[in-house]
Length: 570
Image (tube, rainbow, N blue to C red; front, side, top):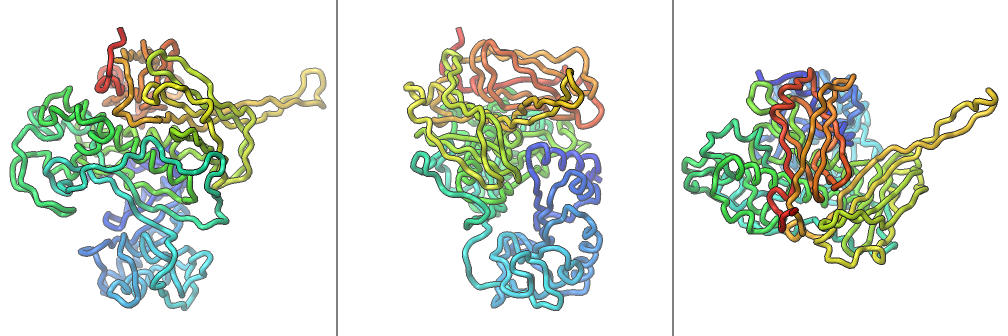
């Protein structure tokens, strides 16, 4: 079949490498293969595990077969240290005076009987239990009867979800076309008096939210005939009913790709880029897919930064991986080993690189157009390091330091925030003419023996970059971009660890420079800023044996100015 141990291990490693420390097994999916749980154990990933039930149509029945299934799965998996809690279902909302009480009376009662060592939870999301568990840990009490409260303060939430629309398709033919972009940030806090954060204060766990998205040209194109290479499929529109479970009548292949992307592209990049939305072809499709993926990445990143400004503990984004090349929700593409154009375990989309760069980094900083900024420490340790915020002029390529704290000290995390303002330091030009970059580095001190005496020693300070955040102070549709000529060169030979260096250079500022390849692996960084006069070096990291020939033959580069330039670089 299509289940592959290597692919599941790569998927877990990709999650860890993007700063994730928890994954959720969704109740509308499946119990996963042993290799996936083994990989989570080895990577230190916590697992929030739904039983395999979800809303209407996926409800349980108190039957011998389902009792045995639940018992079997818990016994099969309970030895995995990665499993942090069991819950009854996805979005079933367990109330004891309704039919959903079966999740307490039957499903989670069976689970609690089989495994009394872990927290149990009614559903995802939930208000918790009123009886039957230790209220602090949610570990079941032997012989206790599980009961849920009828109401209570929200401690866990799902949403919001940004659904793609604007083209008739299943799931995506709705009326909610326009939406409020999350970029630039809207931080309402008054200058340095930001919201107080910390685990001792009221907080929320966000266990599901996201934005729909397509995948790369390399992933999508092999599943379509060339005449259908376009977001609108190059055919007459299907007739589709509206709603989440819509149906379509017609022959347009893109109508069956779940969610369109028209609204995401237009809101973030303007209506002009959709003027020829019905066109097809390789260049057209690459442009549409790049802008679609970047729009999702910007929207979810902005959502995360807004939540991290408040007291949100726990961010599980819907979703991690795609289950086929479609208009889905994932930050990692479909990874079937037998499908042309796919990367085993999943090619990283721009959003996944944003997670790694800053969005899910333990220490990160960001700013709003007002000049209000915060830096967040979610480490379970004190932070001592360097914080530098720079402005990059898009026309001239000049880099201007705005704020520098070479010895930033923050108390033990998680949830420690420091608010500050750079209002007076911001350039006087229109915010469409520059971007900010916030760099955070952590200091490490290493002891070394003195050469003059073996009894004496000295300490040397080293710094490691922990986050680099590109910050827009205007919606990207308004940015004043010059057309960049980005060039890259792949090293002749791999490094000792089989990674491959790639040098990039540009003549003008290039935003969201993105490399894509058919080679099996990922890049050390991607969808980032390349500055003129500064050579950037990244590495290609294979997901197994390196195929240098494929890397050389198939790698391509694009950046935002490839499709949104307002002037030439000449």
